[in-house]
Length: 434
Ligand SMILES: [Zn+2]
Image (cartoon, rainbow, N blue to C red):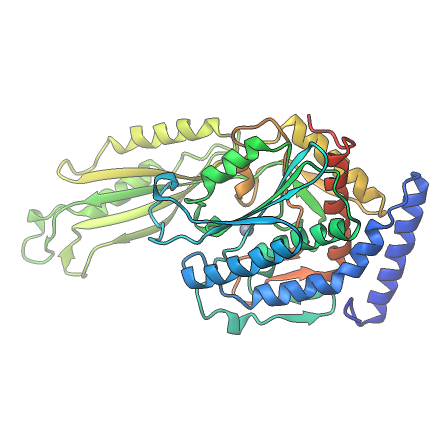
């Protein structure tokens, strides 16, 4: 059996099913047939994970991104969706310092039902891994864990969406107005080509569910908040000169850089959640030359969109003061992701998700601090008061690691159940959207 293969696993599964049935009866709402369909769907979901983790679609691998986009398009068509592959348009791309020339296509699938509610489901198909990493992270099942390349971030999210749609199809469920599935190919590089699509789609829907991982070995959770992420890129230009015979003719870019970092190292503010940490630096050409140039960058996090302007202004004020009058100092403040801020509608929808989870006898934690991670949910939330909740994916661990990314098999059924039921309850007006 694929579930665990150990006695403990079988026992856990048995207890899970028993508690699920009891909890369902206790509040008078039988979880069938969604739960039994979720159970039936588990092997197929694992097959999907196996297939998707074999594709090395790093954000900078256009051919592999094309390949996975076509695979996803075919799967979504087979589920009854109207599918478009959207080529990123330069005029609609927000280029960042590290944006590659060619970005991967986005996949958008539309499922039209007989109701009125519009639901947006988000995931991303790109990974942080450059080509060649697959050999170190082959797909393999070990007890309750499934390892594989980018399996937690974000193959599992795609798989949960696809197989929740399969459950709805198996029930011939069509009470929604529209379900839109949007899967981008540039999340790991700041969504330069897709961010405007996320913002527009977010504003066009009544509820946004995003499928980054739903917790870790300890916690089963969804999120109402994510961090805003920016980079402060500092470039200093000085003048090279022989370090032994004519140092006085140079302008030492490294000295200036050190001064700048020194005067900008106290900008974090625990009260607002603003964090500014200098993390990368580089200077000089050879050891016997006064360095003509130097660069550094700081990782900046904010919890509120409003804090971006304040921290950018502080940085710009500080760089005006220089150590060396002849040095040129340039600051670029690059906003990569806005924060996702908790809002009443998201709180209400996540409380409903908790009640759905309780039908299975399980506890869903709702996290509303911004610590940790930044995702497309934030872009989708920018111009809407509708609920935007992150973390509907599987529990797992090890995103962005070289050999230890995994998901838990035991989270497949609860998460398929949760997603399917949330779509149904939103469609039928049973889940709050304000
Ligand atoms: Zn991700």
